[in-house]
Length: 65
Image (cartoon, rainbow, N blue to C red):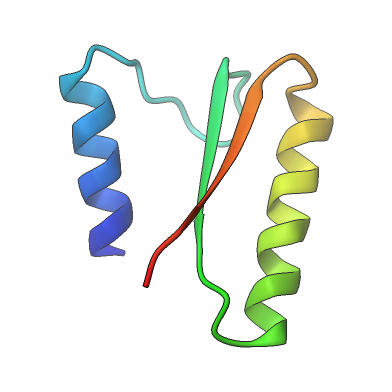
């Protein structure tokens, strides 16, 4: 959660407008981990859902450690 908040702050300071995940976006970032196969699956589902909702967006996975 702290990583996500830091990323959001960094993007906002760089001039990006943050929008809720149910709104259209140009860039979609999923902060995920790969500690378990369940986490992997959840991350892939989130990425797929964002791609379906935002077909022209750049969809990025950020893997925190």
